[in-house]
Length: 544
Image (cartoon, rainbow, N blue to C red; front, side, top):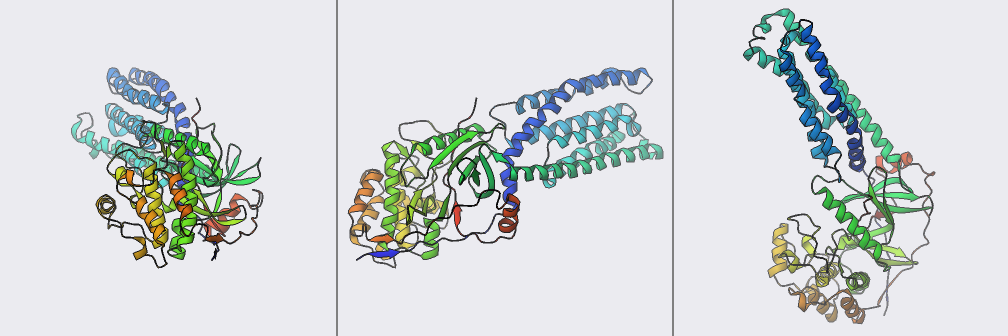
C-alpha cells in the first residue's frame, strides 16, 4: 500500500520598517568608522593650533593665564589619540565602543571649553561659542534621533551646568548670577548651544534615513538586494538578484556584534568553508562568497521556497510514520556526508530541516544552518565564552554537560526531530530551558507510540529510542548508520510525495522595483505565495 502526500506552503507577512533598521546596522557602522577618521585626525592635529588663539587673547588684554588656557586646550588630546587608534583597528571595534569614544570626545571638548570660559570671563566669555563647532562635528556620524538625542542633550548641558557650578565656587565668577548683562550673555550662549544640538540631531537623523534608503537599493558585489527575508544571531539574510546567473539567491551578510568581533568573523568564515564544501543534494548549496570594499562579509546560497519541518508540524500536526521517516531519512543522508568529513552540525532541530520541492518532487528536505558546526579533529574553540552550542529541545546529554559534540550528538538531534515529527512535540518539554536540559540528562523517553495520533511501527519506535539513548555509544554512531536503519524499516519507501508544480522563475529586478516590493509586501503586510527561508549562518573569508 502506498500513501500519497501533498506538500503545501505557508505564507508569511512582509517585514516591518524595523527590519531595515537592523539591516543597515553593519553597513552604517563600517561607514561611520571610515568617516570618523578624518575629523579625529583633524582634531588631533588642528585642535592644538588653537593655542595660538589663546596666546593672542591674553596678549590683547583678555582675562586669564596663558599657561592654564594652553593646558586646558591640551586636555582632549589624549582622548583624540586613543579614539583615532581604536577606529583604525582591524578587526573593527564594536558599535558600543565606537559611540563611547565619539561621544566621550565631545564631552571632553565641551568640558575643556567650559573651563576655558570660566577662566576668561565666565558668563560673558566668547569661548562658549566654540562649543557650537564641537556639537556640529557629530553630524559626521549619522544616527537615528532616538539614539542621538540623549547624548547630544547631555553635551549641550555641560556648559550651562559648568557655568552655574563655577559661579558658586570659582572666585572670578562669583556674583555674575546677579548681573543682568552677564545672565543675558549666558542665556544667549545656552540658547545657541541647544539650538545647534537640536539642528544636529535632526540633520543626523535625516542623513541616517538617507543612508538607510541607499542601503535598501544598493548592490553587494554581483547581487542586487531585494528584501530582507531572515535574521539570525550572526547576520541578515536577503533575497538578492544575481545579474550574471539571472536568478534569485539568498544572500547572507555578517552582522556586527557588540562583543567578540573577531570571533564572530572567524565563525562566519568557518561556516562558509564548511557549507561550500558539502555537496549532498539534501544540504543547502552555497554558490559564492566574498568581501565588499567597505568590509561587509557575505555569501550566496540557494533561495528555498517551502516551510521548515517545525512549521509543517505546527500547521498539519503530527505526521504519519511513513512521511516522518521519509523526511528524516533525507536529513540523515545529508549529515552522513558531513560526518564522513568529520563535520558535526551541533544544532539539528526541526527549524533546520527545510521542506521544499526539487526535481519535480515535493517533500524534499534541505539541511540548514551550519553556523555552529565544527570539525571533530579541530580542537579550536570558536563558540563564545560561556555559550552552549545548540537548542535545548534537541540537545544531547553530552553537549549539555560540556563534553565534545560528535556525530552521535547529531544522531541524538535527529532522533529528537523524528520524535517531534511523529508526535507533534519534542521528547522533553520543561517550563524553562534549564528543566528541559535536566530532563535530557535524567528522564527516560516516553515512547512516541503513546503520544502519536498515528500508528508508529515497532521498528520505527526502536530507532527513535536508540537515537535518544543517554550514552553516545548506545546510539547509531553517525548519520550514515541512521539512514541505513531508516531505509530498512517497515515504512521506508511507503510515502510517495505528490509531484511538484512547475516552478516559475522570479521576475528580474526591473519588475518590480525594490520600492514597489517595499510598498506592496512589506508596508501593507500582504501574504507572499511562499515562505522563503534562508539556509544557514555562514561566512566569507576576510580580505587582507
